[in-house]
Length: 275
Image (cartoon, rainbow, N blue to C red; front, top):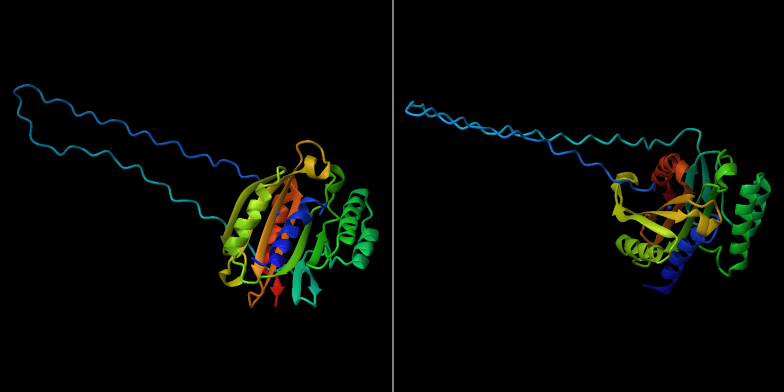
């Protein structure tokens, strides 16, 4: 695989692992207990009493319950969402108005820092600003950076929910290869626990496939948060219309907040415009 793709994927991983910038922890699904079938006892006929032949009753089959249909996810674009555009890449990301989304140039990150009024948000932006502005070429693949500064729980959990968008040349990279390579990179990091890694449909119009990786991050080890704080992540990679470029979106948030973030992210991914 060309080096530029490998570097792009590696940087995508490190961007949310090393910075204070992708699903909930899977739980064991309880299996239904087996329905006991009482043994049928056939009474012995009385001695010397002729017994007419009778059919041996068969045990009644226990009906298998039909699986409960999963409620359809509403992917309608909310009327109050706004659009972020990166004209140089032909990229449009629709998002809730309360999210601060920008293309992370030095100027934009500096302006974003001024908007981050609370201390938690300021520290997050400062960490990213230092990393991205001191690493040669770090800003080049970044298309978007979004923060939920208005989250009232940020002061308690000391983490700002966020997403990143990175664009790299596809150069023939398949989604399956992306999943295998990226999941292997994540599994090599002690503080990351992979939950799922697969190619799936249903997240884009027309059932187009995307790469989907879910993982959990050790908030104490990676971000200096309280022991036991789990950061959940969901990364989705999709092609542009010509499959020439790959857009890699990564969402992170504290585990307790993640179900609502996940619902938002599904709608965001579905309505990405990437030409």
